[in-house]
Every structure is written in C-alpha cells, then in structure tokens.
Length: 104
Image 1 (cartoon, rainbow, N blue to C red):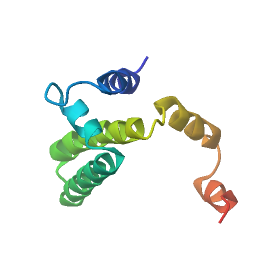
Image 2: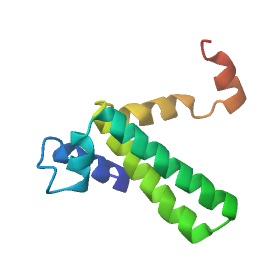
Image 3: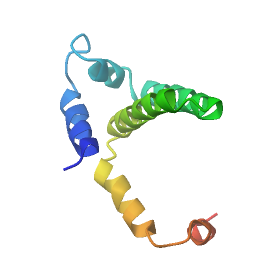
Image 4: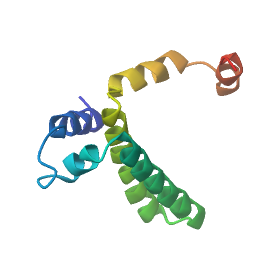
C-alpha cells in the first residue's frame, strides 16, 4: 500500500464526518465544486513555485496538490485505483501516440 492509498482511505473515511472536526470533512461538505476550486488554487501555487525554481516550496505545494486532487476525486466518487488503472493502461505507450488515439 502506498502513502497515496493511505491518504485516499483517510479522505474516504472523512466523508460525512463533522466538518468542524476535520479540514477534509469541511472541504467535502462544501461540495465537489469547492473541492475542484481548491485543487485549482493549489495547482496554481505549485506552478508559481515551479516557475520560481524554489525546490522546497514546490515540493510542499506538490504535496498539497496531490492531497487536494484526492479530495476532489473523492467528492465525485472517483477511486484512486480507477485513476491508476488509466495510467497503467497508458504505460509503455508514447504520450504523443496516446494523445493522438483519444477521441476528439
């Protein structure tokens, strides 16, 4: 089991919890749109740190991005393993070939 699986399991367990007891429960209680918005904010912060070249801050922001991605997925009932299955199917395929094969 990976740390991402552990985190996804914790996030799932927070669904329906008291929003005053957990940041995750608070985000989930606000709905999928707010979870997506928060993910976007964190992604932008990571982009900014990547552009600045601050490795330490980028690493921290990347952790925030992964966490908020998992919250956003949980808000829409998308399992981490479903995402990992898509990545596994793409493995070994050129990114250019995979993108060209997608329906338009």
